[in-house]
Amino acid sequence: MERATGDDIWCMAEVDIFADLSAAEMETIAAAAPMKTYSAGDLLYSPHQPVETLFILKKGRVRIFRISPDGRALTTALITPGTIFGDMLLLGQQMHDNFAEALDDVVVCVMARADVHRFLLSDPRISIRISEILGRRVAELERRLSDTVFKSVPQRIAGTLCLLAGEQQKRPLGRGVQLALTHEQIAALTGTSRETATKVLGEYADRGLLKLSRGKVTILDPDTITAEAGQ
Amino acid sequence: MERATGDDIWCMAEVDIFADLSAAEMETIAAAAPMKTYSAGDLLYSPHQPVETLFILKKGRVRIFRISPDGRALTTALITPGTIFGDMLLLGQQMHDNFAEALDDVVVCVMARADVHRFLLSDPRISIRISEILGRRVAELERRLSDTVFKSVPQRIAGTLCLLAGEQQKRPLGRGVQLALTHEQIAALTGTSRETATKVLGEYADRGLLKLSRGKVTILDPDTITAEAGQ
DNA sequence: CGCGAACTGTAAGCGCGATCACCGATCCAC
DNA sequence: GTGGATCGGTGATCGCGCTTACAGTTCGCG
Image 1 (cartoon, rainbow over the protein chains, first blue to last red):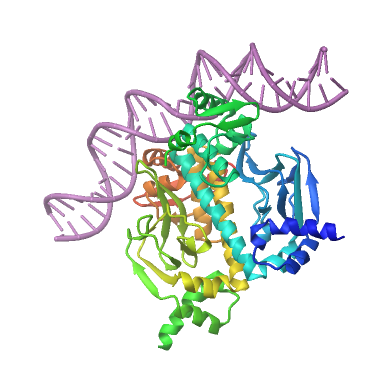
Image 2 (tube, protein in one colour):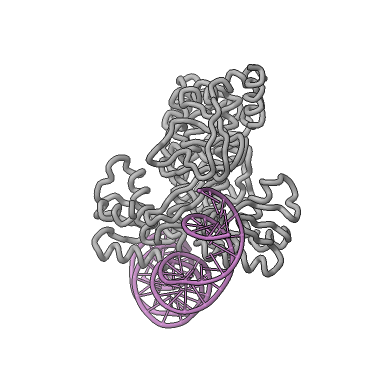
């Protein structure tokens, strides 16, 4: 029992939106958010199976993506542990065009819509942090939108690699950061085709900026890659 | 004095984020948000002159946009009366890459950062609505991002015209809606060049879907235009 | 260990839309 | 009403990146 409670609080304490809460408060919320696991490749939700719940990612990675009429995919977000996500119809709108897929084996906490309102939105300390998260997401999407309009594919790929590397291992961005992504996933993140992604990555690798291996990209020369992204 | 107070409340009552408040509460907030006017073409803020304030648009239109290194512009949002906007560093992040420009002569209420925290973020009734607004903005940006990746320029232009027409005159979307936009502004909204925007609009006009005149686009056949947008 | 699936690499072709270079039309200010 | 500025229209050129079509490679799994 105490083990279980401890685990739940571990779940909560890692999540920055609960940073202002006391241990007792976290326990109350944790009790309303049971854990659930998914295997790599599983869909957590889709336009056809929408969910009325909020997820808190504990372990693994999740990607949020959309599908074009002709079947191409665009990844709009990569969720990392400690982050909340969900269909967001809890925030008033239905963004049912989104799929959520587990990239790795994944552990999440699940909170029902009613509890989201009771525990999260009614508490100013938490709702202000939700606003912060949404604000960050707005800023990121604005950047990606202008990048897709303004920049070339090589620039976008370089920029995306820098961004992901930077948030993977906080701070300066050293050499040798490994990103566990296939060319296909990079293509879906940058809004290009798998073939061009392969070509561009190959050119960067030839120049010694990257090392490529199956399903992994290692950044060898962060500075040049950053410069390559253009601003 | 009473006139002035009445005007201020008029300002507030039109804004949906204050819908839950009493008249007295609105007055308190209104007192902290003096009015300010700008002429068409004026910049309300820019990356070089950032502001630490929140704007509430009372009258006119404002566009939020970004500039590419080589001078092209991309409009990321068109603000209409009753909507809040701002540099959003009040929400924890700096999205200083944005310009805000008055499209028409504009009247806004301006609220300082400290008052934003005191009056808005600390009140659950308001902060939940701010979350809603940000959530809607996230959904809109996700749609625009996937549209730029998936759709052709003609489809994006058709979609943008439908969207703007729909939110201009709420509900069904009748025929004969007029949009006060130049080809250049439409190009900046859809992430294309002015020349191609002109060509595409001309083709739609030839087919009898639109009527064009200087600085205005009139939608003649909403159904076909909507279909043209693809989904 | 051998098969199939997923991932990676390569190359030719071509179409969309950016870019460049204009000119006419409309509007506004003086 | 005249000059300047903004807006609208049009064509030629050209290159990026999508598409199509394979072939080789690494991995997981039975």
